[in-house]
Length: 197
Image 1: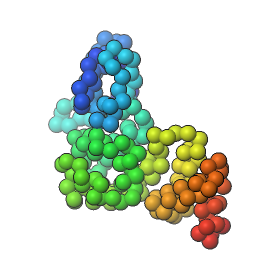
Image 2: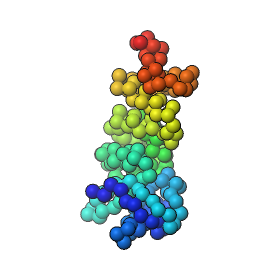
Image 3: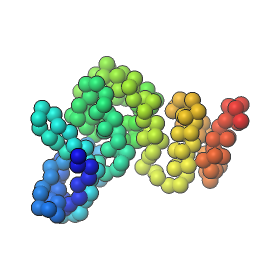
Image 4: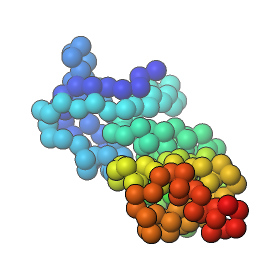
């Protein structure tokens, strides 16, 4: 299992990057467009989180900059009839946080806008993953302390039985009135507003 590759960027194309590792091996790593757009120029040092996939006896590496992207790719691959090509198409169309949010909100239309994803496949992804991606949906590009507290509050409410959409909306509303509220305070506010405090 190859979980990370670190090296010097040798070449970049829109769907792949070549990294020269210190061992002298050059790795070709497929990347979604959302990752490619954030890659450094040739000659720069880079570490990618990777997924090693063997299809039809051909091994391939898929690379990501963030753990959430890597996790989402692995979860998509567990859905029946979703292979690496389709998972990469989904992740090229939407940043991992947005894609996870769409899945958590059961937005099959969002998924079916991606080339190669039909209505049935989109519905299957939503059915199989909507309750398994809330942790990735609340993690966003904004990783400041307020965002982290809100993310933990949403996770806590989902664990208490709220749907992701309901919990996310309620926490956003509570956080808008007090941006410095603790995770516990946000959860208490939401429960109190819903008559469960």
